[in-house]
Length: 112
Length: 116
Image 1: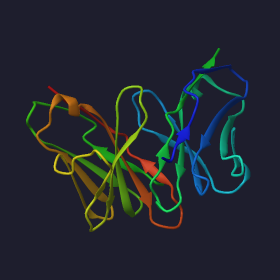
Image 2: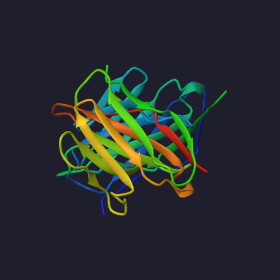
Image 3: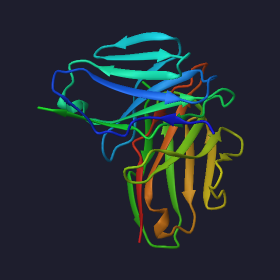
């Protein structure tokens, strides 16, 4: 069974610190990786996607992909209280085109 | 860009009635739309994949006669919950995949259904 695993948290970081969110996946042939942010009671919002090994930066967010280790992470620099949300990792497995498998999410709390 | 809308945002209905939820891609053409449901403090559960002009593909355990999906155009998919019961109460979210080589899905704001 293809799985995406995340630590449920909560992950608590002080304002201004770096938050590091991790995700592992079981399907070695996965091609596309996504991070979504979901505020309580709201639908997921796309933050970043990454396809190639290495780092991809967008503002305060950096996604890191290591296909050999089957690991994808999201770093949030200068964390703000407004970053407090659940972060969902999603993977597009081989052969299923656009269907995504979601992790259960990591709840992030940024404290003042 | 990449805006997806859903209507209604919230609906309360009596047990036994049917409820239709619309999902629209506002500024792009979506060859594929997806329907998810989410229970409180749980992750998204994919219910079905909807392709324009063809029958939806349902995930295991999802009753296709209970959850009717129609994807009549490249910008509109509908989910009808037939003969709704209290256990169908949930947060229903659609997403749309933009036409092209990328896999990116954009989510609608969701519809909260409460069946009394």
